[in-house]
Length: 545
Image (cartoon, rainbow, N blue to C red; front, side, top):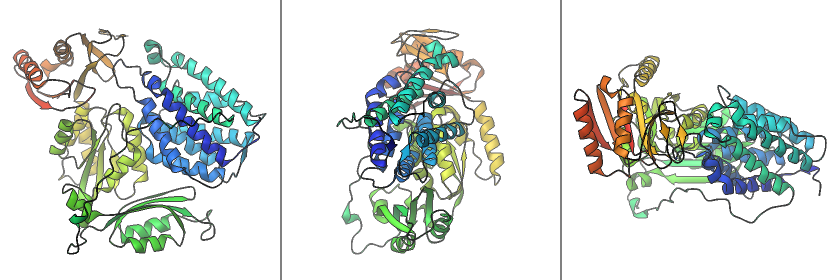
């Protein structure tokens, strides 16, 4: 049966089926990583991003334009990793192309796909061909919009597959690893699922589950009849602007944001289409709700007593808005209880749990920003695949000046935070000093090889322990300690003054202590400090300065 026009119900089913398809393929997509260690998480990042969009349109009623906008907003906040951020921008562009469209014919949808390509390229400061953006661009360019939507999707998938197959010819790292681009493969999986739904092949399978945050237990006795409301309420809602109340074309959401900043604290607010997302700390949520309702109606609403939260978790930072803002706040990312504690000890206000294989979302960064009352917030992503989500959060957050530092490793982030001069009133000087010290830091990791690989200095064998820095393979051995010692030597330990050693959750304490003793004997002038990082993925992290 030919589909002439696309409505909101069909598009919702297509997005959901796209997520089902991606869920089935995510392990294969994860395994397409070009580096021979278990750090592939593209499939997971894209799935969590798309699933956030699907959750945002559950039970949604409205036009195609409105549904696309709601899905895009969900993906924006749920975006994880570079692939997830780019995917969210693809659907943001699609939403722009569908603005005001009730139902779309083939030409209207094809035009929206062109807008999606444009938005995807804008999301990447230096576009690299042979990646997800190439598959999106070439796939869209090769799709035939002269007939019905079914034919359009058939030709779209053919072009995407051809483009994906060609990615190794555009990126040498893909060719060397013998894989196609994982982001492009994820995108193709999504559109395959969308095509299935378009043709009536809608499965009843659940979307592959992703890790969910535990639901907090409310201890009601922590706020009784004699308690005092010290910290106000954390208030969050989605407000649908209504045409009966405002002129959608001319309405400026700044009117709401300015009001929130006058009456509340820790404000995060932005508009996507006709929906305004709000997070605010206030003592009088009712007044805010009454004010905002003059512009629209609430889609979701959550109000939490922060005094109760504070009493339940003494270390929680929700009370910060009661104090004068400090000059600088620090947000970083780490995984492993030992590493997280280490970052807190050197001055991080918020340590977002995450890293390789579990990238934090844009919303995770926004939540962290909202818990810090500072004029400037310095962000250390510590991973190239996390920086885009941090950048996107920085653009959305308006309650402080956000500065995302180019930290690509745990070592750079650790030393960068440690060298912050909190007494210096000049933020530019501080950033210059941080950047300079990070450039002098070398970080190396030891992990298990998941496939054979050839580096410039070493051949890697499946199951061995491999030592590397950045994307440079430096050592390989069936013995973990030998791989670590060879890595430290090639990192130039003999010419360094200090080395931090974080050992992972799979490494026994006595092994780590034996390794450090051997290294100290070999490098007598090197100060070595051992820490139980308890991090996953990496058996050892060496930081030299």
